[in-house]
Length: 79
Image (cartoon, rainbow, N blue to C red):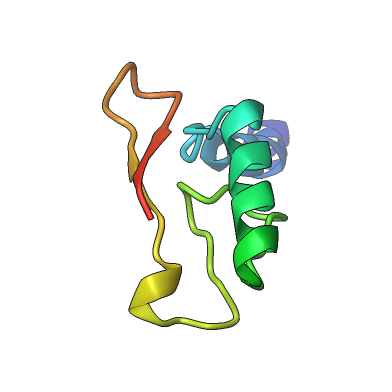
């Protein structure tokens, strides 16, 4: 019984490491500044390379990332 309870309690932590790719903070700040100057309404509460959804879903709001460098760090390759 305790084993089942322990497994259920630890299950969320197993899935927490699935999306570990991150955009470096310097690139997030650069995107934030570019977005501000272009008048974009980009959501920076999400990682722009992992599930970032803009309120405006036009093609000119798309950010493309390369996450193949080492599997954990992404870099913006186009906007």
